[in-house]
Image (cartoon, rainbow over all chains, first blue to last red; front, top):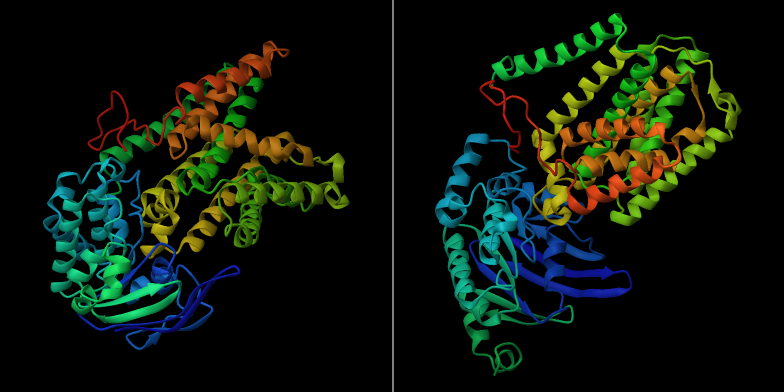
Length: 234
Length: 316
C-alpha cells in the first residue's frame, strides 16, 4: 500500500534521512522504532507532505506523492496524528473533530462518523462541548486520533501516541490502535516505547541515525538480542 | 436555516433604527459637524479593526502593515475621483480591488514567514508603500494629494461598516472560517488535517486588504487631502491597538474597541498636554487586568436565536 524507496531528507545542511526503505502492506500494523533524533518523526512528516524530500520516492497505492501537497495527501487517504497531540486548544472537542473532516463534504456521513468516534472514545462524548485545552493528556491523544480518523483514512500515521502518558493509559491507547486496525485501517506507528509497539505490530523497522538498521516480524524483533539490549532495557 | 428568521429581521431593524436616529439627529442639528467627523472616524476605524482582526485575531498572522493597504486604497480612490473625475462608488471599488491585489502580491512571499518575522516583513512593506508615495510626483509626493472631492458622508460610512462586519462575520462562521481558526490554533495540525494553510493565509490577507482599501477610500474622500505620512507605521500600530484592546478573535470586541478608543481620545483632546499619557495608562491598565482584551474571543449578541433580547451577552 505504501512504499518508501531510498528516501533522503535534509534540514538545511543536516542529512536527516539517509536512504529509508519501508513497505507497509494493506491491513498491517507496521512500527518504526528508534531513539530520539533517529528520523522517525521526519519519516512520517515526509510521507504526509509536511517536509520535502531531496531524493527517493514515496508510493501510495502505486501513485508517487513527491509533488502532492499535504492537503491533497489527506484527500488520497493518509491521515497523520502529529507528535505531541497538537489538538486545537481553544476549540471544543466537537469542533476539533469537525476540522478532522475538513476534506470531506458529506455532512450527514460526517455526523455519523463523529458519533462512531464518540462510541470508540466515550469520554470525548462527555466532553464534547469543552475546549480541548481542558482535556487530560490521554484524552487529548484520543481526540487527536479521533480527529485523524474523521478524514476516513486508509492509512493512519501515528507519531508517538504514548508520549507523556501514564502506563495504564498507554495500554488503553494501544488497545484502541489494534481495534482501529481490525476495523480495516492500515497503521504506520512511530514509537519510542519499543516494547508496546512491538507487541501490537505485525512487522517492525528499527531506525538509527536516519538509516534502517533492522527489519522483520515484530514478534521476532521482540526477542532479538541487539534490540533487547538497545531498546527494551536488556 | 431560514434567512428571514426572527433574529435576522430584528438585526436588520436594529441596523436601520441606528441609522435613522443618527440621520434624524443630524437634521435636528443635535449632531454637528464635529460629532459627525468623529462618527465617520469611528466607522473607518471599525472597518480597519475588523479587517485586521480577521488576519491577526482569527488566523493568527501578526501583521504590522495594515495602514499600507489603507494608504493604497486612499490613493487609488483619490486618483479615481480627483484626477479621473469618476464617481465615488468607482473609487471605492477600485480602492478595494487594488488594495487586495497588493495583499496577494505581498502575501505570497511573506506568509511563508511566521510570528515575528511576518511582523517585520509587513512592517517593511508599509515603509515601501510610504516611500513610493513620497517619491511619486503624480500623486503629490511628500506634499500629498489634495482637492479630492468630499463624497464620504455618514450614509456611505455606516453602510460600508455594516457590509464589512456582515461579510467578515459570515466568513468566520463558515467552513472556511473554521479552517482559519485552526491555523491560528496550530498550523502544523491544521496542515495535517488537510487544510491548505498557504491558501487560507493569503485569502484572509487579501480579504483584510480589500476592506482596508475601502477604509482608505472613505478617509481620502472625507478629508479631501491625503499625505504619505498619515499612513505610517504608527497608524498600523493604532489599528492593532484597537484589535488587541477589543479582544483578538472577537468582532464585537473590535467594534467596541474602535468606539471606546475614539471616544477616549476625543475627551482627552481638552487636555492635550496629558493626552498621550492618560491614553497609555488606560491601555496599560486594560492589558494588566484584562490581557485577553475587553471581549476576549467572545461575541456580544444583542438578540438570541428566538429573537428575544439578551440580558447579558456571551455565547460563543
